[in-house]
Length: 292
Image (cartoon, rainbow, N blue to C red; front, side, top):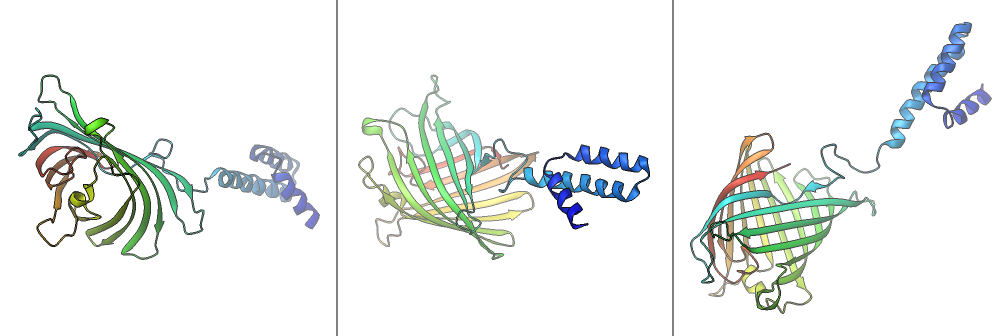
């Protein structure tokens, strides 16, 4: 019996489920029900084993392309209005949109169930109210980060990352900086909280005083009410004198149909775009957002 089991185990590595099934039929036709049942069982086990072999050793989603997922909010606001603008010929009304995706590349290298991912985000300001409809500004943010989950029901994960941000321009309009950051995510009932701190690394020649306006930390607060999401994002240089620069963004996302949502956003402060990092901006916009 032991020899038979060993032979059968070895055979499962070489023979397909269909062959086991056909063999079982032969035994059944001969009236050898005992061996027929053994081969029926082997056919089933072989089929199950092969499914397990092709199952990935990493999380997968069936609704993503090459495991590419959304990252930050993807949105299109056809109409935004800015109260105070630079005297450079721009219009107060323009279109703003953002594209943001991530791609996991490594899983559980350290045994912490961590995921190492790369991400790319792009935010653009499009002067659609002008006759030539030029793109006024685009900010590009490639990023790499590791996200480590926790076992806590409230404190969900911690994330370490490196973020480059630039506007792709040259000369006096060039803006860029690099940051190393630490963030975490907490969820309590309908509320979410995402604090993030960072330090700049490398050259800041294009914008030496950017930290005076954008600071070294921000905080996202969210509240879910059914299919509606209300959120706020605050950033500050944490100065307690007249050099304090604090910014706030308030968002309302509401359902329209399928994965399409309405999006209303209000921003007041500094750093709405890199080119205007040191200019106070007061902007409101309305459009559409994709959450999945």
